[in-house]
Structure formats: structure tokens, C-alpha cells
Length: 138
Image (cartoon, rainbow, N blue to C red):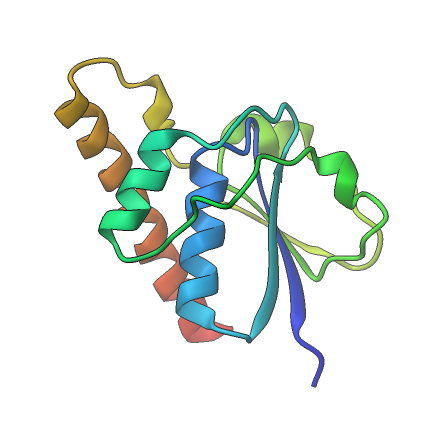
């Protein structure tokens, strides 16, 4: 059986989609080919790198990618992890199943380093919980 190809989208491809990509790769092993991208890519947020490192997952070599890099790639599943990406997500070639999981933007949290880390950790854990449930049926 060929592995399913999954694309995880968020607006900036800097935090939620990067964490989801790292988590899913760690949790699913080689079951899927996993990519992430954004409609307005920026850079991978340093807090996302730090909270993933705290969870034992290294995403320090990830880069923020524009979804246009993948428009010619057929995906089996396209997962949006923020509401803006769900609204602006283009149609991808092939019979891609679309899944939307809206998570709050941890990068929008202002405050101390500890408060920002806590926000990123909460979103990371929420993504992990959603992926755990999803993997049980996929």
C-alpha cells in the first residue's frame, strides 16, 4: 500500500502547521508522507521550535513554505489548522479529503517568555491530542 500524502496548512506556516507536521511525523512514523505550508509564509517561530524540542521533537531544520510549492502535488488529505487558512485554501489536485481543526494562534499571545511558552505548549498539546484521536481511526 502506498503511503498517504498529507499537507498541513496554516497562514504563516510558522507555528501551528509546523508543530503539527513535526508531531505527526513523530507519531505516525513512515505511515504518511507529511508536508506543511502557508498562504502567507514567514519563518518558523522560535517558540514553536522550543516547545517541540521540550517534547523531544526537533523541528529546527524546518522552513516556512508557500502553499504554491505544492499546488501541482496530489494530496490524499489536506488539514488546515487555522481558520484563515481554511477560508483561503485552494483546491488541490486529486481527491484530497479536507479536514479543518481550528487552533488558537499562540504567536498572538503577548507577555513574558514563560507566558508565550505556555501558550505554545497548550497549542502543541491540543494538536497532539487531536492527532492522537485522528490516528486511531486512520
